[in-house]
Image (cartoon, rainbow, N blue to C red):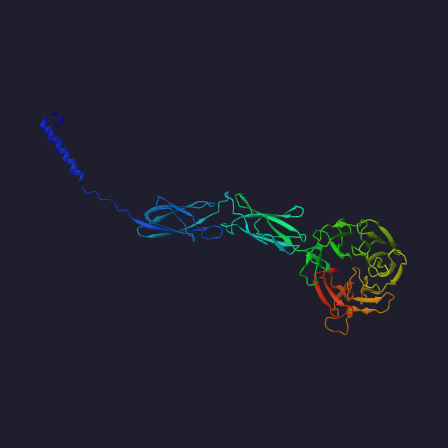
Length: 513
């Protein structure tokens, strides 16, 4: 074929014009374009821990469409989304981002459910705790106070938050850690002092370790109630001392330890409580304030001996001294632990046990026992140890707990009228008796009067550990089933045996002043 460059000029021009027209005509051929189609995506975002809807979650897509956030019900909607494969991303602060893939079809709606997990690596501080109870600067009863608070604004109850709580005593600034790394939003501050201001603060911590502090809140405890009753109670294997009013509404636990604290006695001048504890291995006498504070050991010679594990002691009538038994010795000691004085030595092969001291005539009544608890006698003596005289000799059945009347003219005690005897010291039918010091005028209080209602000890029970009331008109005592390990109860009864009234359940060794 002849090359165009070899053609004459006029033919070359014609050839170029023909080629241009050919190109122009070919570019004008019909080339159809595919239409763009659209659908819609709706969805809900929820919290993985509690399935609650999450608001303000950012929703974006790939390929990019519009970006939205979820509403307060966790819902979102994407309209005008091109058909085909679409990836949706959900993001929220403190949560792990999640992506899901969907296929969008023309003029159709596709629904998707998204679950977000809390980001354990979050370092965003939580909101400080709020709404304390008791309210800030409130006055509350003591000695145990329940403290409560709520998570700060924007923090869900289900969040994995941990709390520390510190309590400060206003008078001395001492700090107590009440709670450490706990999910609880309540804690009980136990054994607080009365009439005292306390400050407390809560630290909140999220899983990432970020913390926030509550304000420093305060409360004040009420003045100490005039609890006239003391007793010992055993719960969860621990025996401790409690005080209360007659109705139990001011019940206060005074001791907390792994040892046995028992036999509480309020001093005659009502300023200190004496009790016995085996914290040193043997029972010693201690004293403490009426709110349980300031415990002090008084004795070095133990309150011990035959069947005398901490039961054999009593205050002096003026509250300045105590008398107590230690094996075959009867001692007097000052309330501060000084001035230990030997008052008496028991008859051969006998030990001293329970004891009482009256200001009327300044006399002491004391029990002695042999190697058997059923071998029991009562003696009278002067407070200086002189005139040691037999009061009640050995009787059939167990004889226990001599105590003076208010006027010092009579004694109250217990005796098992069934005269039961076994190796464990068990009683089947212990009754309360009162009588004059010369043995006359004996009354069986447990037998009641005329068999009237609330006047007779029930069968199968023992009446034990009696003492006269402060006004001398009643007797406080313990009623307990004669089966071992039974739960004791504290009662009061008239001197005639009428009107037996229960005061406290699960209580023993009562004192009433």
